[in-house]
Image (cartoon, rainbow over all chains, first blue to last red; front, top):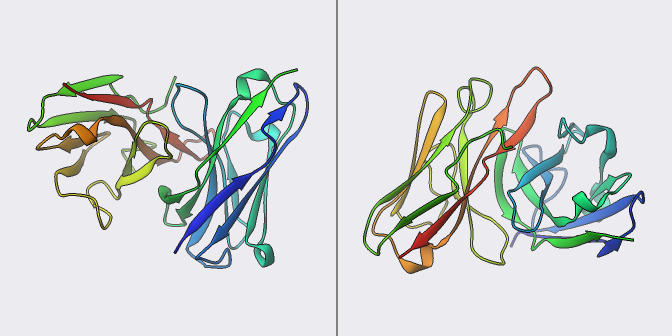
Length: 121
Length: 112
């Protein structure tokens, strides 16, 4: 059974750095075809892709947020970590991690439940 | 402003057929496959259609997808009350500005 679970702070202050962890089970981060993406959704708004990482450590980032994002993985812990610097209230959103496929990075077959992050002083 | 364009809303009565469009460009839909996601209120999105027209196991055949050129469509036949949800299209974008996954702005489907 494939599961993904996000964890991290529920509240961060403006200018702080957000660190989110996605812990996966039911598949390995060393699987050649599989990767993990981070996607966010501000309250009442659309989904926005942030970044992905694959088993060969290949990474891609949202063009608009690239300067603020870093994605990494710890295969032994089955974890993918996303950091976002210089947080702003507009970054308030539910952050999801999802399993993706190397052949189609827009394909997300399993999603975490999401974690709501609020940016406020 | 989303890269893929969807109508913000759609509606239909039980039993009807509704379609939701997704318009893109040559760098995304025009050269890559389209996936559709269903998001029920308060829940995470769920994969509904992949590779333009394929249904994951467990998705009813009332849901179908198609793609032509730089546009794609999701069709729901035999509309049911439980289909009331937000629907999103997504695709890989090979833009020269940098590759990205792009989503549509979402379509809120109301079952009247």
